[in-house]
Image (cartoon, rainbow, N blue to C red; front, side, top):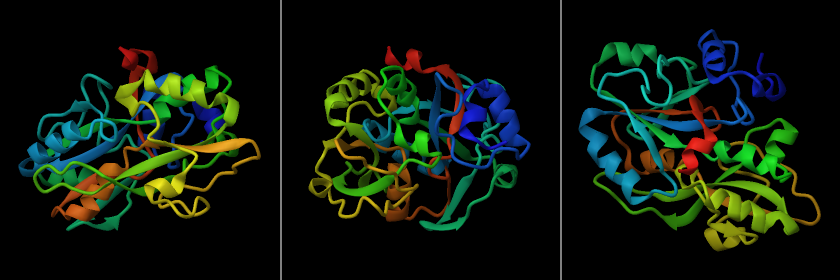
Length: 267
C-alpha cells in the first residue's frame, strides 16, 4: 500500500509499522490526516552543536521539534516507540556533502556507531490539513505527487560549518484564497509558518517552476498564484554546501510521521 488515499486515515503508529515492513516507500504528503510530520537530519555528535545553532538561527526554514540523545533511535516525545532508522519511507546518505545512497532503512549506520544525533524538524505537510479544512486546495495531494521544492537566493545565517541558501516548497493557491492561506500558516510557526514569497518566484531566484530542484512539478491553473513557504529540505542544501563527512536525512517528501496532532503545534 502506497497511495495517499489509503494512508490518510491510518494512525501514525500503524503507518510507521507499514513503512518498517517496506509496504510504503513513497512520499508522505496527505498521510495520517491531522498529525504532524517532520524532516530528519542525523549527524555525528561532533557536528550536532553547530547544526543546533544553525536551526536556532534559521527558525522559519528549520523549526526544531525534538533532538534525540546521541545513539538514541526514537523520538521519545513526538513518537514513543518509533525507530528513526527504519520508520521513514526513504532516506538519503551523504558523505563529504555528496549523495551516496537512498536506502529505505539506515539501521546499519546506527548499528555501526553510537554517536549519531537525530534532529526532528517541522514540516509544511503538517499545515496542509488545515488548508484543506478551509477548502484551500493542495495541488500535490490532488495530483498524487510530491510537493515541488526549489533552491532560492535567500541566504541562511551560518552557524559553525553549516551555511547555504533557503529551500522553499510551492503550492498554487487561488488568488481569492491567498489571504486565508497566509493567515492559517502564519499561525503554525513550528511547521514553517507564513510564506516567504507570493507570486514572484524570480524575486527569490527561481527561474523555472516546471522543473523543481526536489519533488515533482504540479499544475498551476488560471486564477492561481504560486505561494512559497520555507522548507525543511533547507538543511540538505546546507549539507551539500558545507560538506560534512557524514550525514543522514529523509529523502525529500518522505517524512517522519509523528503521534502529535497538528493542533498541538499551534501553541
